[in-house]
Length: 118
Image 1 (tube, rainbow, N blue to C red):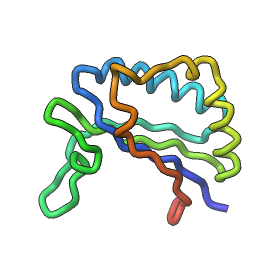
Image 2: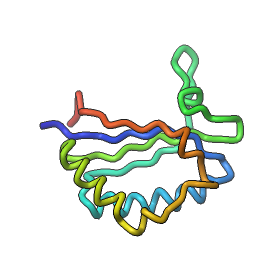
Image 3: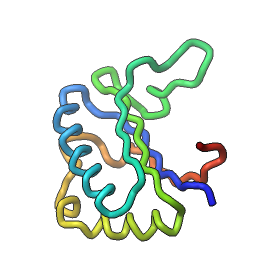
Image 4: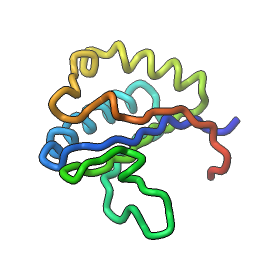
């Protein structure tokens, strides 16, 4: 069975990037402790190339925002469901608020089956 991935695409105000990074570092520790295989948070550097779709547009990023592309890797979808339930109940994250750091309602989130992997 191939791995399962939760993917995220969001816009973060550039001024809030240090606060977002702190949140992401804490989230990484929690996901990995509960069994995720990998956790990555990536900030835009070289996006929106001519002739291709726009990450900026897809994330709905405004001029003062940057795009974050993130993913969490799991052994399987059942493992993802088990781990995410533990993560959401973990007190280190259950009290964490995104309010004031980024607009949670504009974040894209989805689960993906692996089509090609190592």
